[in-house]
Image (cartoon, rainbow, N blue to C red; front, side, top):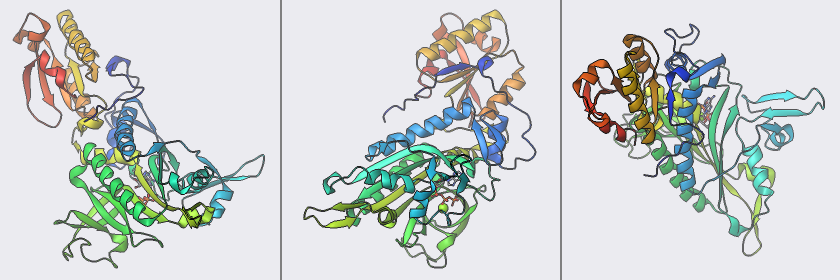
Length: 432
Ligand code: ATP
Ligand code: MG
């Protein structure tokens, strides 16, 4: 597999330089597990209900998710762009959604009295944008995507990062000259989505779910992750590993794949969805193409969303214990949490040397070089949830002397109970 490059983030960090602090208690008004743990560990900060800052540790996780998504979207031909958040009312009038889109944030300029929306989704921008390219039938299909902040006036925002009023989303839009082509791409996108959810650590609990297709298609498909924190109800077929969203269970009572009648009710969160828009938006904006005979037709569209901040919160909901978060390796803020116990000069030198060697070998490491107690350091390490904990102490130093490679450290996986003594060299492949 291709290596994931994390742009703009450094590989290693000393904890004494990290400006955020862990907390013993989460704010009382925060009920969701994801927000409580992410806030306590200093990954996010709450500005108000449904609106969070991503702090350095949280941003690192977000950037890893971004890059996994980018890689898979690029692999199915997606071209990344970035569209404006600020959108004119006129575009929303064209699709008749200015009045009907319930969670649209709308406001008026004090100066010009013009009305605007803060983008909750981007059909109203991407459709005229593609139209403006004057493409010929030979130029289709077109696939564009962005990773961007979205705004929705959600009536309730109680699930932490799972339902924000401001949140990040990857939205891809596809444009085709015929339905067969859309169908083919839809399947490719579905496969790419499975790869993404598997890599971020949700493969076992995320199900393709049949949902309403609106007025243009029988179904759309959601990717629902089973978790108690979910606000959706799905009915799962254990044979086919597909589900039906409660919203259509009256029309679709059995498994759509095998006809199984006994479906299991589960709580779930929608981490992504794919939707055949067909000509809904192209006809609203007059986005057409001329075929080889000069005959005009409406362009056929699909849209494909993944909520990144929601996904980040969902990973927490799927991977935690009473002590804190347990990050899957692919999205962990760091691969190794190096913990130095004691301030004896020999131990400090040893720990510094291990840190430098890890850095040289491109292992992402957070180095707890603080002057704090073992108990405090272990508690923080469990809370932050980095996959590998490496302890350097006088005790480990006594196990072997001589060259750095010979020296021993204690290695423990966050997901396991027992630590083991290993040579320093063994650490260099961690997180690779
Ligand atoms: P939901 O049914 O959960 O409200 P939706 O069907 O309105 O979501 P879409 O409009 O399809 O969602 O948005 C695409 C993706 O964006 C969703 O699959 C989800 O992952 C994410 N998303 C939607 N709303 C929010 C929100 N308020 N906070 C965080 N992520 C969201
Ligand atoms: Mg939905």
